Each structure stands twice: as C-alpha cells, then as structure tokens.
View 1 (cartoon, rainbow, N blue to C red):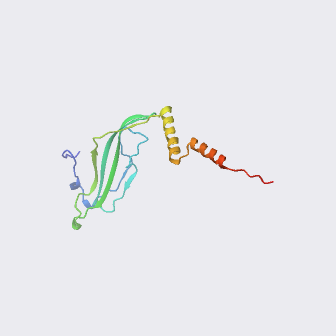
View 2 (view 1 turned 60 degrees about the vertical axis):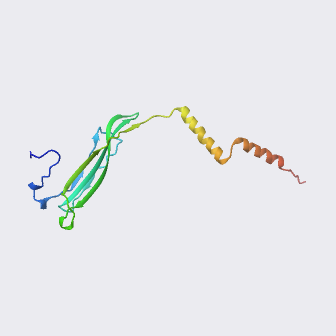
View 3 (view 1 turned 180 degrees about the vertical axis):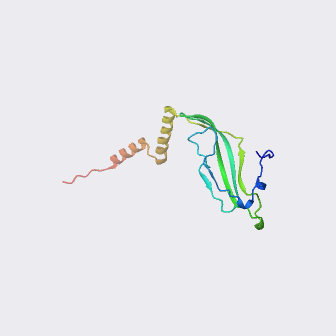
Length: 162
C-alpha cells in the first residue's frame, strides 16, 4: 500500500513518464441496482492513447432514479457522461496532468418512473375527443351531411329520354 492523502493522489513520481500508456477499456460502469432497461453510456468504451502524455476526462452526472413498473421495482441511478481527451504538451501551452480522470456530480433531484395502465373510461373519453376534433375541423358532422344530401336530392330534376 502506498500512503497518500485523502481525495486523489498522483503516483507520477514512481514511474518514468515516457512509459505511460493510458489506453483503457470500460467494460461496465453503473450505480445502484442493476436494471436491464437502463442504458449505461460508458459500457464498452475503449480509448487508445496515441501519446504517452494524454489526458482522458469523464465528467459524470449521476441522477437517483426510482422505477416502479409492472415487471420491476428498483431504486437505482442513471448517469450521463461527457468525454474529453487531449494531449498534454507544456511547450505548446497545453498544461495538465496526463492520466484517466472520472469526475462525479451527484444530482440533488430524483427521477421517478411509474408505469400505469389507462382505465377504459379514460381511453373512451380521449377517443371521443379525437373523433369530435376530426369532425369539427373537417366540418363533416352527420347532421350537415344529411341536410346537404336532402337539399341536393330536392334540387335535382329528372329528365327522361324516350
């Protein structure tokens, strides 16, 4: 074990910086219960370092999530990530420390996802609203159609050719 202060530590003094290789692969990263429906954006991420002085940064925002569906009920977390990578070249003005850095931001808001089925009466009311909207916008209500049909029949004259 290497003694280091709390927080983060840079172990750069122990290794020659010419031998750095920060190529990496993230097979899986998740927070909380593993839920099959949640997509973890860093799963399968692979980065190849093209220089020994390269910095990879992952800015991760973690959001607590409650899922209540008919199949599962879970308290878990979703996250979004912004990736940034650059080569450190002090001579060109690109300063920093080469390495792989993950910076976390925990959201104070919670997302609750609940699955509910619509009652039949609510579905019927919405369906009537849609049908009524179609009739009112296209002016095709049945009363007007029947009046137009009767007026047309009354105004037509019939001529017979013998």
